[in-house]
Length: 561
Image 1 (cartoon, helix red, strand yellow):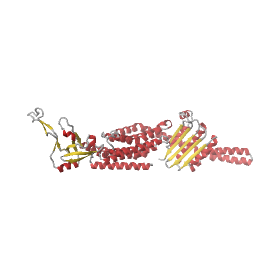
Image 2 (tube, rainbow, N blue to C red; image 1 turned 60 degrees about the vertical axis):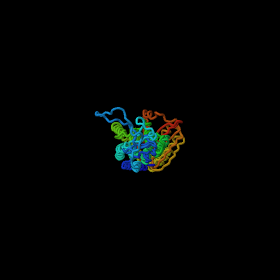
Image 3 (cartoon, rainbow, N blue to C red; image 1 turned 90 degrees about the vertical axis):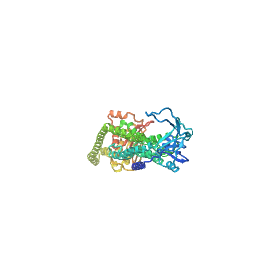
Image 4 (cartoon, rainbow, N blue to C red; image 1 turned 180 degrees about the horizontal axis):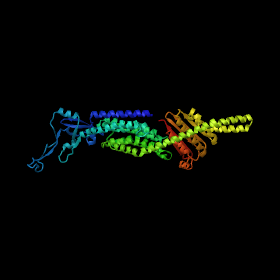
């Protein structure tokens, strides 16, 4: 699923949640989860649905309704006391019990049926067995107040409105780039994932099986576009496959539990908690994974990568806070509101200054790289227009004078200068792209290495000029290091598609040391630093490591935005 598809799915899910929550509020009806029937002179509970309010309150089929919507249906035995004296005190113990046994209240049979089939607000019921030997001092009574659950629907109004505000304002704020550059491309997905758990609260509060099932499906479905977007930020590595499987597995499992938990047996008491955990994991797992590789390569990254790492981790955790908030129902959207305030304050006083420093560092780095390329182009032009022209004239003069040895030396120097010009400014890179330029580079390196240097390439599309230049310079530096510090065979792999490009260079040498970058910089060698700067300039991720069996692996991953 591409970026546009993920955004469309997020919009569709949030839209369904918005409309579904609105309809639930408009209906303002709570399904209490039981059915009543009028039998002879009493009203009894016929069935109780699993995971319903009725079951939560302890109702079971067969109970006899004592009071329905404030109307007494059965008179239970109660103690009778003497009349109060002039001081309002009741003298002595009870003088009797009335009635002597549970007695149905006299009413028309049609009225009793109408009450059983109508809307229930308040209900009091007792087990039928308790009526056989009912005693006022010991017999239990089960009381169910439907208005308490109806109040949950009214309380969900604030949660629903908060979700709608977060959806609109959050999308706009993130799309403006105010939440960070790394969150701008996933603004719609993030806003939908945070808002949906709040928007479906009226559906859950209604206790209607279709509404609860729809909410159970929408929440993990809203997390999926964000989870997939964060998964795209995880660099290619052996762990990426398991992370992808975890995202899809959690989403499918949460959606399945969410849809069918209404019909699960009551013994499956952990279904709701499992649904919440799995739904939150859909975004949290890839969010942490997308941040971890950047932190792990901190020695070779700029402050901008640390800022981006934090932004991605926050993006993965925030939907989970929304799920906790929706389930807790503490009011004022807590703890989500506290989490957002904490993130904003941290961004204002911690990460924003770090981001400004990172921007300044990036601008300085880009200026250095641009100045380096400009100087390369200037030197190449000077050599071509001045020294090479003079050497060409010198070769002709030596040939005319019959000095064969001098002419050959001049030709050799001329060829060397042309090769240097090619290194400084490669026309084949501008004209044909990275693939042909790597072909030229590999053939040249192979002559210098004295062993096999192999290129495996798949050119799907041309990349932006600055990206192609950055990839080529990284390959140039990595191959030079492979020849100098490693040994053949050296394998170069390059692949480009509309979605991005990848480059890897592997050699069979002893492998790079963990502190190689620090030692090289201390000794005045900046090859690794130059490669990292080239990667950062084009927004790519560079990974340099030693294989366990020996050999250095250099990998560059660039994704189109």
